[in-house]
Amino acid sequence: MPKVTIDQDIGAPIERVWDALLDVESYAESMETVRWIRLAGDGGGHARRAEWSVLLKGSILEWEEEEQLDHAAHKVVFRQLRGDLEFFDGYWVLEELGPEETRAHFEVEFEIGIPMLAEMLNPVAQRSLEESCAQMLRDFERSVAGE
Image (cartoon, rainbow, N blue to C red; front, side, top):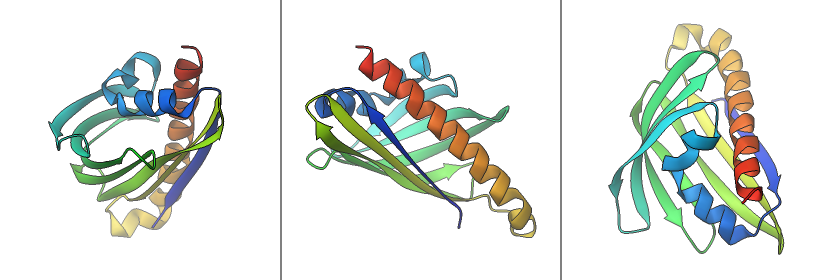
């Protein structure tokens, strides 16, 4: 199963980055690849559902995910409930590097769901997801560090 892993150092305190990371509904304002995100359900501060719509190499990719929020570990684990891909699960985690420096780590595994074309499509989708997610993290870094 293809996997995408990206790290981005952000020049901001971990709590500011964490608050911004959780504010997914504002991502479309600062991230060019995000069309919209809507929170669809709240599990009392430790779980929620979110609906995503993003641009991936000129195509629209949409899904609904369940998110588990670990505030103490600064970690969000997500699992696709339904969407355009067969499988799309992963996590975000923040690491404090210093008082004004935070590392954001993003990891996702995915499966397109077309077995006959997987060998050809998975590498293309993996590169596209890597580029899109890296751009999202760069946009996120600019918006958080600029506050």
